[in-house]
Image (cartoon, rainbow over all chains, first blue to last red):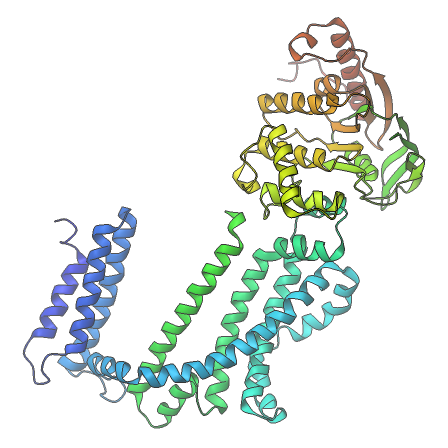
Length: 300
Length: 271
């Protein structure tokens, strides 16, 4: 019983009452379904949660979501306090989200092709170069001044030039995403190599490892914590740059989607696009966190 | 034949003189303890022997050949950082075996590794990460690795310095047992320690180093027959005499470092 009488369910009941209250527009069906599903999932987690903290966590998150939806619903559909064009009702955004999902997924595929090409190009060059530069001090001293100057240049400033320089929008965006991801990965890899405890390097040296074995089996895993930091930073940068490039020059993709409908003052689709991007980034972050956890298993 | 000769070796780090004119010869199969207070350069001397650094002047030879860099003819155990934390204990040993005996199959390496892990009392540690083991178990694994590559010379840098007394005693016994196992082809060992009793228990000879700069203060043979049993050792008169002599040498060295104007008070007087 004590799991049922709490803030989450109080907000839930209030929201339910607001949604079911007879009004001109009828019952917002999509919103109702979403709210019921959320409540169901939360209740399930409340009863199966292993610790008190995880139970409370699920309830608190649900309470916040319900609170936001309640405020949104009251301010738009119920009392019409906000500008109708800039603030569409939750129900209409939800309906739009469902109907636009196929188009957005198609755009996403286009965007991801650019993202993956640019990002993996950066990973494939910055990682080996970073290991080598971190390991050979002469190379480091030769390269360091250039890293210091070029690294901090905001990659966004390359966009206009890249679009002019390169034959297609596609190649220009891949180039920009590459630049954006390259420096954080490179710099963090170099610092990762520096951060390997001297004792471990001595231990490797007394085993007389060949340089290739040393780089691959000692330096790479030793620098891995820092490489992971750099790689997720690089991924985040490439996502920002992808969206920025698409806002400027694309004719497809998820960034273009938002920009295009903003030009037509279709803010419902703009909001839908932004929410969709949020989900995509969350999914990618979740994936990289899993990979990172696996790679750094030995640290726990 | 694994005789190590250290001839007039000095080592300076920039303008800081760490070791001055060290000369010492270790016969094949000898167990030499390098004893001294912290900062006497005993670890530096071991690094020179390992080939991780080169003497500023003088030379170190192994069977007459000068040491120019690290090599698998000298196995090293450090106080920590011996094992690579991202590899399992088994992978750590296999990596070393691949360097020492190239050209075998992976399974053969794993079997050899398992054998040595069993020998040091870690039969189930093959697939464990070093982080999952206690400090004592990690040093056991490091000893398993160094014996697996079967280098004729063994260099140990305070390998038990970070362990509790009971674990340390167990590992000292294990080390002696492994070292004595093969009569006639014993490894030549250099063992760095700051613990007088550990040095007497383990060594054939004890080289006492002094500070500022590190130099040999005296070389003391340990005439206590082996096997040396810990429980009897402390009762032996020869043990007690040697311990007192070593403590005195270490103490004199520390006193001579103090400012001339300072007087050392008798115990308790300062309280």
